[in-house]
Amino acid sequence: MFDILIKTLRTGRVTSKYPIRQDIAPEGFRGKPELLPDKCTFCGECARVCPPGVIWLTKEKGEEKLTLSFCGCIFCGMCEEVCPGGAIRLSQEYELASKTKDDLLTIIRRSV
Amino acid sequence: MTVDDEMEIMGQRLNRKIRALFGRSLSIREVDAGSCNACEVEVNALANPVYDMERFGIHIVASPRHADMLLVTGPVTRNMELALLKTANATPEPKLVVAMGSCACNGGIFGETYASGGGVDRFMPVDVYIPGCPPRPQAVIFGLMVAVDKLEQKIKKSEVKV
Image (cartoon, rainbow over all chains, first blue to last red; front, side, top):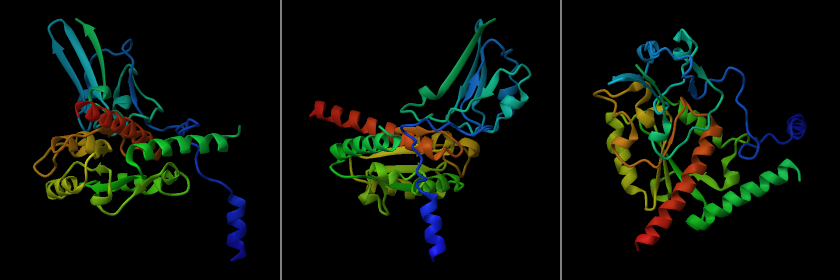
């Protein structure tokens, strides 16, 4: 019993100081995907490979649009893996909660 | 001021805000609407000493009739659809509905099939979306803080209407 007590006293406080101190996610954590519009070639490979299908490539008159919704994204990182130009990068950001679904969209455009 | 003092003040502030809004602690009813259990594990982790959400005055209760907030996980499968609607009807107003995890937000990896509803917002209005598969416990705490803000807005709006 004393062993447990000594262990407990030695451990001290373990509660994370989260809302005050920013808790940085560990190395290799897959968080919010970021699109880099300079590198994107609009090939549509990410849209093809995305398991839940939350990346769309749409072509309107004179404009190509790549939309990524985190709402439904499973953060698997397949888009990052498959992208030939390295235009998608999964950042370490995880505070994604929002009040509307529109806030969860990232859109990049290119005129053709 | 040490970090511990800062944290205590922050916790007290959030606690006071919740108390001013509800008159008591914020009670959450966690509804599993066909989730794969990963989100439930993260909600469990919220109650452990490391993340300890009870320091902010947020509790998980066993009945929707005691709850102020529904924390819904899972894509709302056909078998859980009625149970979810019954739970929502049993929750007293003003209530908050928080969709936790990518499945609850949009169907996620399960998508929309004959057996899967494809998101909570097809069945009831959702106040806060917490994406992540599963979201980290810190992300859930952040989402709950956003939800408390939203409730403040809601109460102010209803006061203006009256």
